[in-house]
Amino acid sequence: MIHTPEHIKSLKPYVPGKPMEELERELGITGAIKLASNENPLGPSPLALKALREGMKGLNRYPDGSCYYLRQALSEKLKVSPEEILFGNGSNEIIELAVRTFLNPGDEAIMAHPSFVVYSTIVQAAQGRNIIVPLKDQRHDLPEMASKITEKTKIVFIANPNNPTGTINTKEEMDAFMEKVPDGVLVVVDEAYCEYVSSPDYADSMKYFRANRDILVLRTFSKIYGLAGLRIGYGIANPAIITGMNKVRQPFNINSLAQKAALEALKDEGHIAKTRRTNERGRKYLYKEFKALKLDYVPTEANFIYVPLKDNSSAQLYNDLLKEGVIVRPMGPDAVRITIGLPEENKRLIEALRKIQSYEL
Image 1 (cartoon, rainbow, N blue to C red):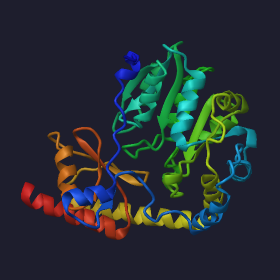
Image 2 (cartoon, rainbow, N blue to C red):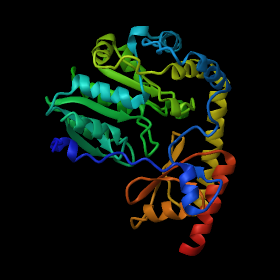
Image 3 (cartoon, rainbow, N blue to C red):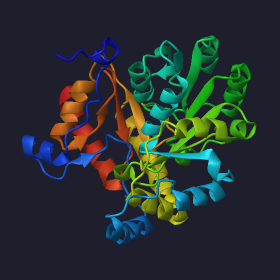
Image 4 (cartoon, rainbow, N blue to C red):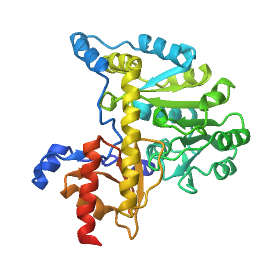
């Protein structure tokens, strides 16, 4: 019998949600709405959809392994050199490439909790040691994370905005943190939701990149660009970091349709602006309705809202909402994360919550 190493055996696999069609069939409902995965409810840019239709003709050819045209477009937009950009099959692959490149067995990686679960999973799979620092006031406790850095520390993960809480760390906080980080420790700043942020205090991670610090900035086309199903993200770092990660990257890791759609989505600033407006209006509406329902929530800078609960009731709330055709994401026993949807979806969520409360309170 094949032997699974203990560090793999003890991992908890990611549990995906069931397809909406299957949930509807099981529950005998129709028209379910998904507010669980922080997707753009408007969908992709029309320019991206057009590029996808046209790109179908060339599917017998391998994709451009260098992502040449998308790389050039991002280089111009971000004012960085093409050699300072790395593309991945979503940000997840870039996280894995960073760990495989810079973390040896027994090395340490520091991260917050709760935060993006992929960080700890990938580090454990690489036989690294996860150093977990609890959030403070639902935000990364950067002073405490800095205090955990040792000679064994190779990577620090910071999600800004954080998933699942939607909170950010400020310029002042990040400046103080970076001053304490020694050379040779890679700071991975995951900015999957950065395009949604409106706070003027949001930290500028590119400042540290331009200062030639050991930093890897992660961004994605899955969220505000609406291309989650195509799986394409990118990282920005100095050429030495990118070169190392490219050595372990698989060739052709970005499919041709993803490249074409991302290139066109990048051009459609009107669609991005519309998405931001939709999200902002939905956020204000849900804040108002949550207050009326006396439901606690964490103010967000992303496209989702973290709702802390009492008495380990997240599973109950999830299941009750599911029966009403509304899918949210449980985050452990005492919280749920709710994506901000279209106006009609947000209204349906509130109606479902009112119905649930009518018999629970």
